[in-house]
Length: 148
Image (cartoon, helix red, strand yellow):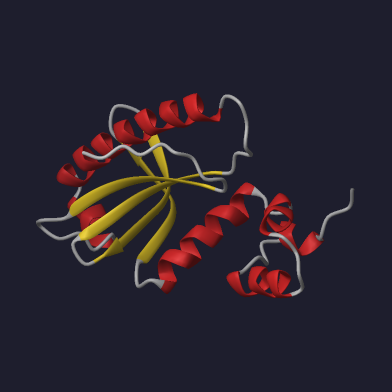
């Protein structure tokens, strides 16, 4: 099936999604046409609209190389966001648990990296008492929450 080429050229925006909803399209139909890079851009755009400064695909190295899809900072809070564009499915919950564990490891390594790298800490505008929060964003709702 031919899909709207605009979605694939990085021209996705919240306004375009809103327009499609106003035209009567269902959200499930709209998100089918959005690639993973556009999904990350959308999440970043949403965070920006809520006053967060964002950095996409933040790469760093401690023992090995890591990448965080979106780093979003507002005041003393920094969100480390991993975007997963999974559809609904039988094994999604176990995959999500595994992804959560991986994201928690990235958070720990990110903290180590920031402690030893004042240039990155300054670039990301991180304060002395910064609070780091790990988040997984998916298209479809799941009843899985980990709080610590």
